Length: 112
Length: 115
Image (cartoon, rainbow over all chains, first blue to last red; front, side, top):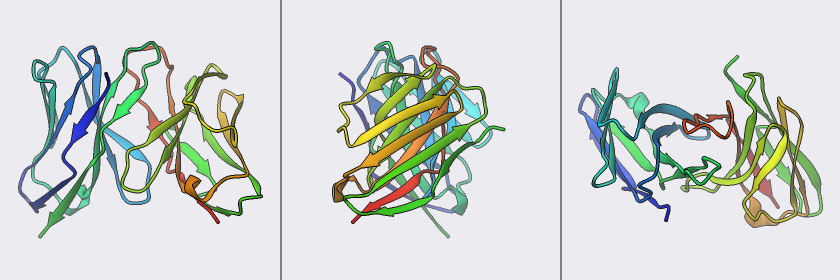
């Protein structure tokens, strides 16, 4: 089956690291994505990881993938107020149409 | 141009009205998508067009009618909507539907309110 789960809320202090977690159930997923959505806006792709990788780093963002546990995390270093948004993890379904299956989204609140 | 544009930004309509949402991209993408997003929820896929042909309809009620006039444009025609259809409607595009890496580029959305 296809199910992506995330915790709903995370609050961090400015300058600290944020870690947003996600679990998925489809072991055949080839790519996993992190999208950011600011209030009233569309979704912006932040980063992605291919399923045969364990880690991917892109400036302040680090994605860790534990394929055995089907666990994905997004770490944001030196979190800024501009990082306040909803973060969605998503997996590509391999059922022939590569649909994106989204988690419920984690609201990140950054306070001074 | 790496943008997906959507018009209008906001739309208020009555249950007897007919309106259309428009989406445009000039990235040469051959797959285009409509999503519906309710408050505090993830986007839900409605329709997928691949090479201008409808390839996925996620059992969407017929009061929503998609149209893909050409590879750059995607419309969503609305008729006899219900108040529960009020939501943010997001359009997205991707290079093609079939590749395993399917980065979708999203537009800013149309905020629809049905009275």
